[in-house]
Amino acid sequence: MKITESLISILIFLISVMLLATQCAHKAPPGGGPEDKTPPEIVNHYPPQDSVNISSLEYIEIEFSESVRKTSLSGNYWIMPELPEEIEVKWKGSQKARFFLGNSLERDQTYVFTLSTGITDMRNNRLVAPFQMAFSTGENLDRGSVKGQVLFERSQEPVYVYAYIWNAGEDPDSLLKRKPRYYTEIDANGFYQLNYLSLETYRLLAVQDKDYNEVYNIESDNIGIPFMDVSLDSLHESFFDINFVLINEDTTSSYISRLDTLSNQEIVLEMNEDITLLDSFYAAAIDSGDMKFYPSAGKGQELASPNRIFLYFQELPPGRELSLQMSGLTDESGNKILEDTLSRSFVAATRPDTVNPRFQNMIPSPGSGTVSYDATIQLNLNVPVDTSFWKNCFSLKDSTGESVPGQHDFTQLSAPVFQPAGLLEPGMKYWVNLDGRSLVDLWGRSFPDTLYMLNFTTIDMAQLGEISGRVYSSSLEWQQALIEAQPLRGKEIYQTMVQKNEQYFINYLPDGLYMLKAILDLNRNGEWDKGGTNPWQ
Image (cartoon, rainbow, N blue to C red; front, side):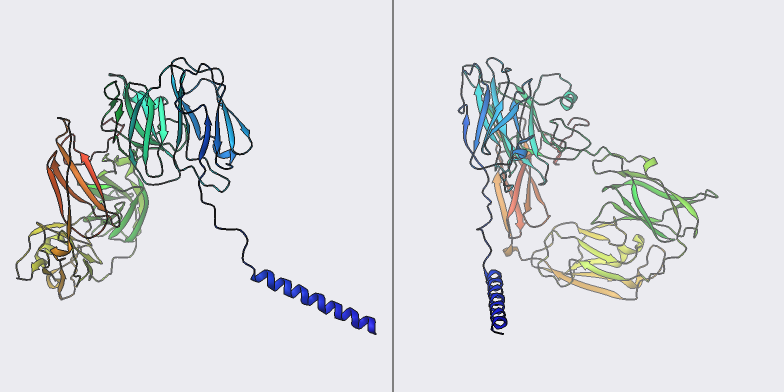
């Protein structure tokens, strides 16, 4: 009996110890310190920077500040000009790598070895900026350089700046078929620096190389076109501010990706990209049986999503198979869309549109007290409006009762926009009047017998600021510039034109931080032309 009691006592003691240990383990803080976010660095390399008279070089050695992922090195190093033999990499531990070059260095040649930001440590921290090391097999190093910035939307694919030796009269399309003589990667803020260039004339391209092949692929890559070529000589060894804006050269045909029948009087289309409806736009539905034409009675385009098109008809034959035909559209790049890509078969809805017309809301919101002086007035309806009635039913008046002149925009028939002819007065109350008693929709149905009276107040001038400055240029060819100010929070863009060396002003700006751009308007058309390769411009 004593033995049994002793066993029970021991068992109870062991269980108590286990519970205590479990509780203590549960309450203990997690192990380890803060997450390591320190990027790797290059702490040593061979040969030393700017070495000359190198008659032979078996390998380049790079030592990192910490262990790096060996797999991250693949595709993230290169030497310029390229060597005929492939570089072989051998590691000495996890922090030191040797790049064996083979016996293929040219005489009297400057070489630039580069490591890109794709190289990471064991915790996936990347190099902050590309690393470059130069050496020469001759007595001197080439000293040409070009610097600038690439403006782009951040993504996973790296962006490079390619430098091609450019000969007068050369076919520019040849650039798209060969690798560049020199190239470098941009840093996290879009800045780049091409150093140790031979004194030649270059054409530069910025390329978001999505397939990592050092050749621009118009189908997949984004590209930036320079505004000028760069000629390096003994008097002009460096060029600054050769900047780029990445564009996507759209070569795919636009097409209807979706068609929905909302009623037998209205259909909505979704295109595969944003499009523009020309003044010559035409649409009709054709009965596949008796070939009868049903021309559209009106059209609309969603302001927030320009790839959505609304087509309105007096009445389509319910349940009949129809073929939609359209013309007079262009894609985002301004290319006219072929008519054979704008046809689509569909079955007309069996139900008519039975919605009762009504006013929904206004932009700016009624009662707003900080409306911009350059605001437009948008009235949202639940049906497309008959534009011939609208102009007589709408008015905008200031607090003295004076009517404000302007233009109506019926891009979206269910959301007409009024653009005042000039700037609105600061700190002024305005009234929007919409007489529903005389207003009808596209099918002649009346709106409620109501006079809508809505007001808003423009922002006080004392709450607005301005940006001013000058654009200087020593070139006789560069005469004017387009200045753009865009708030870091918001999409509104404020613009002004200025002649070179003269002061510019961008007035009436709300408080905030702005990104300021000065674009040299070389062709003096008042627009920012971002160039292209098809054709070259």
